[in-house]
Length: 317
Image (spheres, rainbow, N blue to C red):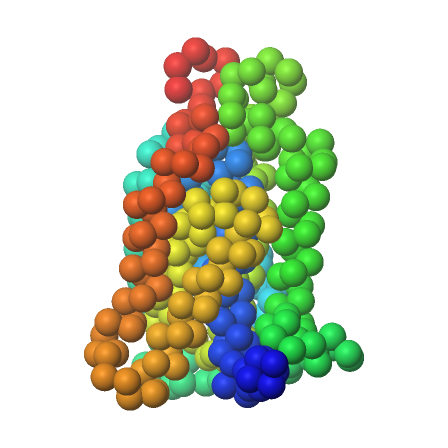
């Protein structure tokens, strides 16, 4: 029992859990945004680009105004606008959703790098103060769970709230049921009076806003600076999180914590000098992504109309 108590209260374990949670939050937010998209039948491969744009938008406004909350709002609005931008091509024009998403990712990488150098200069590396860690009374002292859930920043607590709110919206609200109906059978949904295009546009905007918040978390909280392509594939990992979490908010939360723990593990094993090449440890989160997609992608029960364009008042898609 003493061994278990010392393990549970170890600063190493506590630090590992806290780091795993911090690394899980941006992936969790991107995947939460993806729920709205995929439940509405929209395969948003552009989550990576939306997150990256949110990183820059939030950082620029937060740095120049000195108000981090204005930066959060800017990053969220940036994500929402990019969601609508993607919707124009995929909903209105009926473009291939995968191709449009990849194009958005490539565009975002180039534009954010260019704008950062225009605004700050080629060699500048400005930083922001970031959000402080808030230790909730009593709850933060719980072994294992305290450092994991209750010694985090305000954006992390906001993420918890978004998990619950998303579950209520998707499964307990009329709009959420409209989203699900649109993703399963848009023709039948339209015959019931549901404006399919409007639902999909709104889902892309809301999903983009939440993914943009994930980008804001990276630049204003986790790193407190902006780097080229700093999302480093987290948007793609979020797509795997959607599969593993079965497009359910609580399932996504658990899957995101798993990936966050893998990321934290690879960072810490590099410092321990255990003889494993650090390049292999860097691959760990991405290897986990490939395993998830290989073994679980066929078992998730995708929405029937996922990835399929819809033409209003026409029998073809």
